[in-house]
Image (cartoon, rainbow, N blue to C red):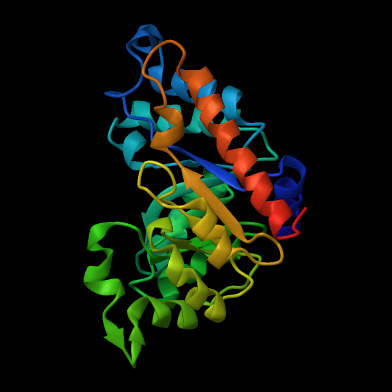
Length: 272
């Protein structure tokens, strides 16, 4: 998906919501266990319920890899089911030396046809560069994460600035605003204003709104740019809104609630 296509979807749906498909066999409603593929059935119903209110889906690959070959089959079926005008994110957090990264890029962009993949920057440019070979595909680089342990390294001072700022400044030269995004956690939204000084035009994938306590208003206040420039992810708050047979309806209600809040913010900042 191109940048212009993504922006168009944000304006059409009046939303910058990303739904995280962190589908856990131990948490899905028990009646789904009678299906041949419970994971796919859960995802299918979530997608049916939420696709009008979101512009992206983000399967977290750990939940599928943990199930072996059956999990990979469920993931592929899920990817195939997602409407083609919805942005897809392989939340894989890969990052390795060049030849290995080339294989990861081939796996997610060529064989599975995701629009994007999350990548760790620790091993530097040659671990990220192979992903840029693919046209209209995106690298989503980890920058400032919302987990408690993120500060162990990301906030270490390097050349008089936090290490995550060094990552932003250096990596922004590897790609461009049409093939690179950054992960910035919503629980650190007030730092977004500093981040925007370094990368004013890049899209940001922002986890942490909802179950992790991040504020949508703070994220938009500090992080929104002239094109919106945000994909705000909610996983547990939507997909596990209910653990009964009404789970899809409950997910729809939560997605709609976020979409309406996002519409208000898009109007407030003159995006739509």
